Image (cartoon, helix red, strand yellow):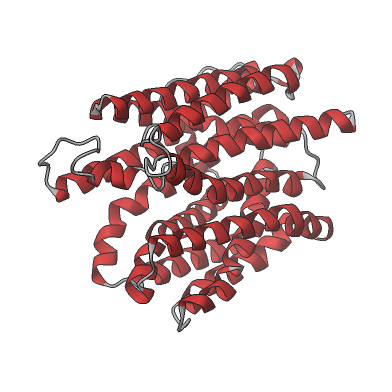
Length: 407
């Protein structure tokens, strides 16, 4: 492939993934006040706090739940019809989802908010399509480096999304700003991304490599069951599960630890997440390409997973808030090395004709790790605020043991 065209296609895919992740991160500072606000929120005045927090949990959890079912469907559709068509279809759905969310806030109308999260969760499964396109554009040497672009996109979204959501939803900054404003902007950016994909992105899956197998709406659970029947795939997807479960458990409840131990303020919490986001970007743009030139993905994972697991108990030994930053830097470093290399290993399990299927399964497994921690985390954190760190370390250590046994 022409190098100029290759760079352009990778840039378009990275930006598309970035907007996909923005859909997750821009909501971080919005949904909690949106649900707990007694006057200007989306839930009826007089609703009790326990009911409000329950609704909040459902709003947050329904997104990855829908992603769980949709990712393999969109991935398999991209194996049949090509990456570009399915990607354009998904971008239309994401833009619609943002609009529905904005309208639900303006009215306000809680059922519309749930409909929006269902739409956005379903079409965010297109991440499996972007992963498949990257696999199409990669060879064995460039696979981990190119998948690292997704990690950089996530890091950028973690740095920009929460800040953008908080800024645009604050009427104190501008009278026109409210909870709906970030979603109007996200819809506009997604529409612009649609034009970019339509005009600049080249189809990466030739017609002769496309598959035309039949499937139905439960392809996600069925594919996962089939994948876990094969010994090699079962072991690798268990690694994905335990790594994702542990890391998501940490990210969702780390704020509780910071508040309980250091009495962290909202601005300090934002500082921590921005710091993690910046470190993630630097890891993917600088560290991952350098390491991938010298080591194979399996070699990197043998070390990075073990080191990542060891960081979370060390966090409990940090005596002051400023010193946290010296330890936290290793989390995006080792996680940033682990995720693209693990995706590269998974991609290598399939041929060019079924990248969408296998990476769709991978996305479904990751979606499971996003909606399971909130279901059990609140109960666990209630016992002691340090337990999430130990559970995270144990879960990632299990992932490392499973990977070592599978190499």
